[in-house]
Image (tube, rainbow, N blue to C red; front, side, top):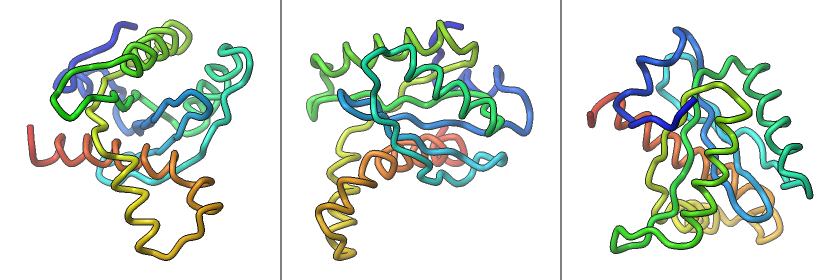
Length: 156
């Protein structure tokens, strides 16, 4: 299934399905899941990238199946000036491979400052560095997904 524009995603999703937010990195993929009403994003899991990417896609496919996922929202690393750098190319490749393996619609969503915002919130919550390292990727995925959900609800 090809990658879609954000405004087209809902038309291609089956009713009463959730969205899976992904924050792909070199070593991990942060995952967040929405509720079926597409109102709230919750941190779900951090997948440690395997040596073989096919294992990553298989794990995500299994989660999508078990959690009744109808589409993906993938964080696109965008520079502060709006340009796209090398990480964006890697994210696009990840997304192309994901939709080739899992037949669900996918959109990109600007992830500018998501990790920094989440890290700041976790520091403000007095979370230890070790604990922050364990949760930051899935929290960033939730931040990205919530931004998209908010746009669906009020910003379109």
